Amino acid sequence: MADMTTLALSAPVCISAVPEREALPSFFPSIRQVQRPAIPVRQEPADEELISAICLGAEWALEALYQRYYRYAYAMAYRVLREATSAEDIVQESFLSIWRKADSYQKQHGSVYSWLQAIVHHRAIDKIRAATNRDRQWIPLQVEGGQDPPSEQPEAWEEVWQQEQAHMIRTVLDQLPAEQRMVIEQAYFGGFTHAEIAKKNSIPLGTVKGRMRLGIQKMRRLLEEMGLDTEW
Image (cartoon, rainbow, N blue to C red):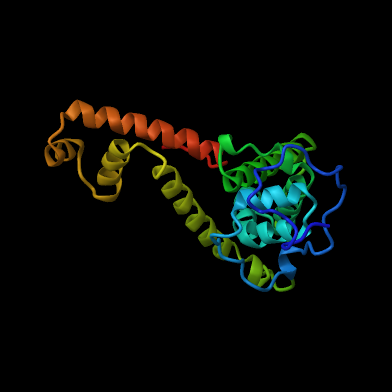
């Protein structure tokens, strides 16, 4: 088994993975069992390096990726399903999918983070569709007294999801060309009208509108690739 001392983390994302694994590593916990906070995203190892290590069968790499993102993955799944146990299942299934098929990740199509988000979102939607096809109704589980456990309070996960959405929007905004990002930031965060932006930056009004339209179109596409439905 590869470890931190033997694995070259600078290696590119793997082309082929170890033989398919049917179960998660023994460390893999339930969401409820995880008491410590998620490990903050660090400079080293990068997400892509963790994927390379997972391809070689490194359980520590999957654990690191899980600790880094499980809260956000659960928040997304809970947002879609509104049911704690089902959301847990989706998170487990999503990380199992990464464990089995890490070699399917393609860096040119987006970050590991957006890839995980897409997996979680698609699996959650598939679960709803499957339930609908079976005429099943999802009803949130409750403990005695009619209240969700503290770790599963909807308000808490709603706040996490809102923070995650804000992070996703900032991430895609940073990927826009500077001129498109500027007009969008001034309009949505600065409160300026199109005419005011044109005057402020000494550019034609039509140019402002064109940059705004192209920037928003790209943001929509990128956010949808990350698993976020866009209605604006």
